[in-house]
Amino acid sequence: MMGLSAVCYGLGYLAGLAAFGYMARRRGIATTGIWTLMSAGLIGGLAGANLTQLIVTGSPGKTLLGGVICGYIAVVLTKRWLGIVRPTGDLFAMALAAGEAIGRWGCFFGQCCYGKIASHLPWAIYEHGAYRHPTQAYLALAATAIFVALWYLHTKPLPENALFYIQGTLFCAARFGIEFFREGPSLFAGLSFAQYACIAGLAFFGYKMIELVVKESTPSIFVPTAASR
Image 1 (tube, rainbow, N blue to C red):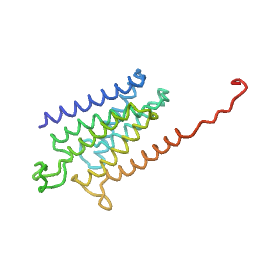
Image 2: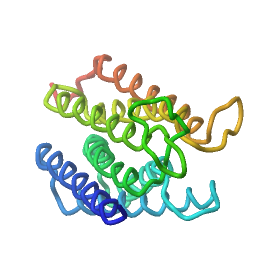
Image 3: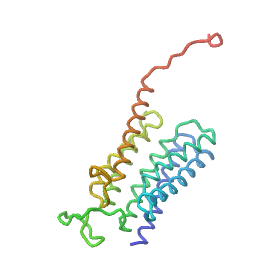
């Protein structure tokens, strides 16, 4: 099982890189700087995923939410350093969805991120001494659905970064719901740390999406100068 887990994780990373490269070429920005940006996001995401898991649980491992947050910060800082001003969120949106759709099967075979006991369900799986919700599969299927939605939308005339905000909103909503079936401690009002992070994510992505829509719907005001007359 651990061998299958490692294979799925590896294929998840490859799928993410392939999706990122596809979007970069489609947008005509497959430059050295963009690939440097992707590397920064990957390194920042991996470091954040491991560090967040260690801080929150006190044990080694990875948490996707911490990876996304730290990867986002790494990308923003690297863009400033490289002087890249064009939005690149859509590239990462496709990459994250593709990587999660495959990589979560690594969690399934590795039996981490397991669900609560649910012996009455016909699709329950036996792990950690009981029949449980296959929450790893729930997450993988949710990511697959999100990727399909993004794939449908990526050819539409949407403003840049719209896919990123849509992906973030859908991911946070799906993860919030699936957390009810995952095994783990609650912090307050019966919600887990991940669910509070998802609430914050929904607020952030929702606000950014509204901001983007307002910006695109507001006509620009052009005041002619002497040089442009």
